Image (cartoon, rainbow, N blue to C red):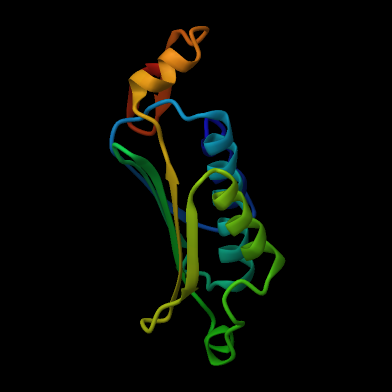
Length: 154
């Protein structure tokens, strides 16, 4: 997730406006969760760009005490809503679900009655103390945040 800023820049360059919000204090992620989260965001935003409208997409990355919550929503074209594909039939959605499950989490995706497509992923996180104790090589570092700098562990 440390490369999230670059991903958002590349989406903007490709023509997708992403309104990104982070909630909760940044904290270190186990490698499997970090990779799954990044790939879910990457694929979710790619889908929003391919199937959404020019209105852009909303991305929420929320660090909760027990989980990382990711939500992506975007308006979809009327054609997409008229004949929606059954949940999970695309390779992208299937791959995101598999990544979430491999990290011990879950992912839901589908069209809302309000004309928006919503992707929601929950990836479980260990308590920060557990993560530091499990890997004594982790050292204190400064982790970038959208609005300044937040301290954390690496």
